[in-house]
Each structure stands twice: as C-alpha cells, then as structure tokens.
Length: 250
Image (cartoon, rainbow, N blue to C red; front, side):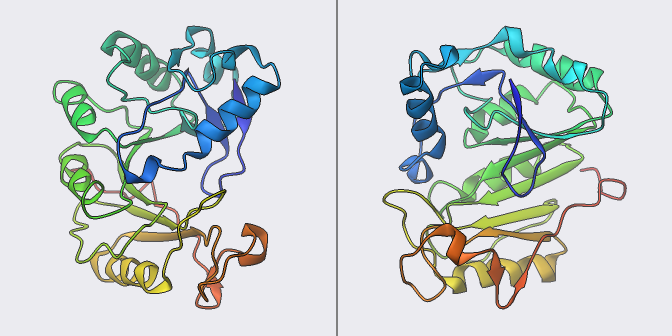
C-alpha cells in the first residue's frame, strides 16, 4: 500500500515489493527489516513471512488512483533492483511510473550492477529520480560511477547511514546528496566532519545538499534520542531539494 511517509525528503511510500537481503555494511541495522518483524508480530498479512522478499502485484496500480501530484519513495521496505525480482516485474513498475507523469518517483538501491544492467537498453521515465546508497568507501563510493552513466532526470546519493569519511568524491552528474546518521538499536556514530566534508564538496561541485538527521548519536559524540538530536548541522537545517525543471540530462 501507499502510506504517508515520515522520511523528510519524500511524501508517500509505495512498496510493490517487500523484503530484502543484506549486501553491504549499511544493511547491518536495516530499519525496514526491524519494521517488517514488528508488522509480522502484529499479524499484518503482507508480512506473514517477515522480511522475506515478496512481489505484490496487487499494489502496482495504487499510484494510478492518486491524481494529486505526489513524490513517491519506491520500495522503502525493499530494494527494487534485488537480483531475485524479475525484469518483467520491474517493467510493470516502470509502466505505472510512465503512466502517472503527475507524480515523481524516488528509487534508491544498493544494487548498482543490476541498476546499470536494467537501464542499459531501457529509457528512464522522465519522472524518476534514481539514487544509490553511499555509506562508506568500500561498498558505497563505487556505486556512484554506475549511477552517473544512467540518463535519469535526477541522480542522487543517500549517504545514510554515513559510516566513515568518504574522502574526495566526484559529484559530476549528481544532482542531490542526502546525508544522515544511523538510528535505532546498535546505531553507529557519525562524525560531524564527515557530513561537513560532503557538504563542502556539494557546494563546490554544484550538487544540492540535504541533511536528514544525526541519528542515534549527537554532534558531540554522545548517544541520545533522535528527537533530541534534531536535524541541524552547524546551527541550521539543510533542506535542499533538486530543481526538477532545470536538472541537466546526462
């Protein structure tokens, strides 16, 4: 189903698939897995098998029923480019997206190889924002080069949970960068300088910067609630969103 999202950079979530498997360090404390187990315990039918990967074709038409222009985060409870989701189902998802040009769709993946393969011979709908997770240097940074090759109207990075200093980044062809710390049980701390370094590179390379949250640790390195930490970096909120009308094509 589509639901109103508490994620600061989107409006609704749409989950035509649910469930996933871990592929990198950013998956260690997956919020979607924790939520899926909670929904399973509550007896929610779609989650009877917990976080096991599952296609839900009955949800495909949901965006078609909403006429109001909406920003959708696709698969907040899964990874649309999981290797066990067939191309035919991805084609069906993209058909819905293409048929609903009043909406914008944000698709985020950790599976950059599959992302590149899928769009090698397919056009990206003009209302799609494609993103990759960049949590560290080893797993996350290599995803950027693949994303850069795909002619999406908006290409973005989600550096959340940010687990280390990412070093020098090539942000050419990247329109938007989201940064955030990890929250929940076992959250790993984010150093403020890691976020500042990304912000500085966005400013010099022309990418829009969005600071989402501190997560389970504050800027002072002390553990505290997400609510207490807030969303400020150096005394202000950074809520930049990409300008879709002027975003350059690859």
